Amino acid sequence: MFALRAASKADKNLLPFLGQLSRSHAAKAAKAAAAANGKIVAVIGAVVDVQFDDNLPPILNALEVDNRSPRLVLEVAQHLGENTVRTIAMDGTEGLVRGQKVLDTGYPIRIPVGAETLGRIINVIGK
Image 1 (cartoon, one colour):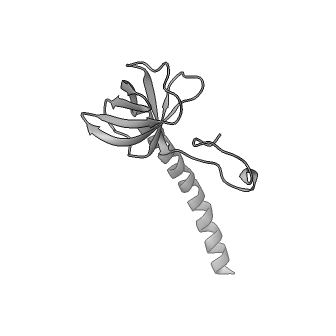
Image 2 (cartoon, one colour):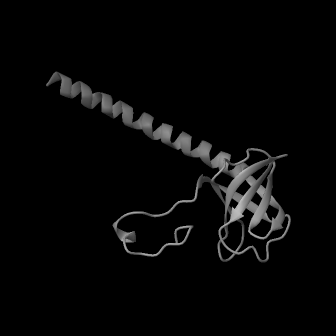
Image 3 (spheres, one colour):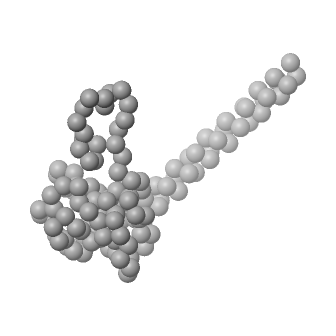
């Protein structure tokens, strides 16, 4: 009985700490993502070069072109140096211009999985 009460008391002290840790981690991730904005410097067919001020996104990260409809996702394929990455567009690049803003999502392209997707046709970006 004593062990159960001690464990319960430890859990009560641990939960607020974990909540604080989670909020701190989320704030750091949001700050890093906000810093990872770039701009288009070249478009050659489906290949788009994007330059960042700092914090190059890792290879295979998904980038999104800002203020574009329909949504255009770029996948980082190569680091070129001079804070520039080479990406592959997952859709058409018509209308892209140099200087257009690009946002780093902070993660690779994600595809939904589960019972809801069984038997469905899904494109490369999960739609």
